Every structure is written in C-alpha cells, then in structure tokens.
Image (cartoon, rainbow, N blue to C red; front, top):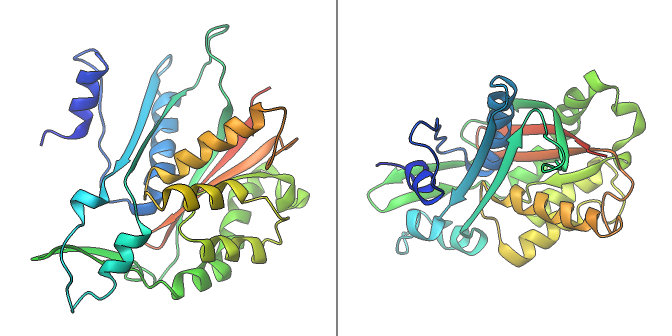
Length: 255
C-alpha cells in the first residue's frame, strides 16, 4: 500500500480530491465487474467520468517454484499472462468531443450455487496457489450459461431474436470454454473470433482480458463493419470467474 489507484491518479495528474475505489481478487470477472461498478458510479454522479483501470500481473504475484502439492502450478503459468486495460465511462456524452462506442444498458451478476470451491486461488507459504478444476469448467459453462444469459436479456425483450443477432465481447478463459458457448448457444462461426484471437495472441490476462476483447471489437466495427458483430445493434459482454460467478453486461451500439 498505497495501491495502484494512487499511482495512476498521480501519473495522470488527476485532482487530489478524485474519488478512488479499489476492487481486488475478482479473478477473470474483474474486467466486467469493474465496468459494472463504473456504470453505477457514472449514473449516480451527474457529469462524472469514471476511469475503470484493470491490471493483473500474474508473473510477479503468482510465480513460485515447482510444488508437488500443487501440480497445476506450471500449467497455470502457461495459461495466464500479464495485462492491463482501461475504459472511460460516463452517463451523459458531451458533443462534439465525446463519441461513446457503446451504452451499457444493464449489468447483472449471478453465482452458480455449490461452486464456491470449483476455481480457487489460495495464499500459502509458496505464494499463490491455483486450483483450476480445468476439465469441469467447460462442462459447468455448458450447463449454466444459457439460463444466466437469458435472465440478463429477458427484461429487454432480446431473447426472442436469438443469440446470433447479438455481437459478443466474451472473456476467453480458454478455447474449451468458448467452445462450450458456441455449442450450447449455437453461435455462428466467427461470433467469438475476437475472443479466440485475443486468447491466442495474449493469453488469459485475468481481469483485463475482456477489455482487450472490447477494444478489438470496437476496432473491427470501425473498419466498415468488418468481422464479428457487423450490423448488430445489441451485444453481450460476459466474464466468468471464481465463485463460480458470471458478470453480464448488455451493450447497445451508439449510432
């Protein structure tokens, strides 16, 4: 301590009175959860601009030597990576200087009962240790993701249009997890192409990964509607992580 929030505020020259909130130990839902909190803060503070910064440095926080009691350790280091991302959130865009890409129409969180110990990170004598339950997670996603998403979009009347009518900003926990999305939701080829690409090029950066996906979706939509999400007005930003928890944000593209 102090946390990275103090350092970021200093580097950016923000006012000493700027209000800061730190969120720790959210795992792979960190990016989506930060956006949910930023949405609430912006909507409840007229004229505010909320800078949501998400950073995970696993190489420093979680590195330790081989441990026979934690055989999954080397696998975790192979899967996870370091990353950081940031998004500016507001509730009242000011023309002509501000041109928002998306409106966060709603944000919800759901925890699947009985899964609290499915994916865990514990602090021990050898540092942070992982229990990833790798084979079980894609199965859990396949069994639960559709009702969770249906509950998120039902109040907006979007479920009847079908999942392929949406664009997708999905935290890519693994290719197997995304395969579960694609199979259960019957997504067309390419709907999760951005998530697959980010995972392949950068690895799973925990919280910030979904921000990398969001940035790439924005880039592709700007290029004359190239790629995933072309012509889709509505979309879903989804993060899954320890708890076992789903963060779901319904997005609407700004005209």
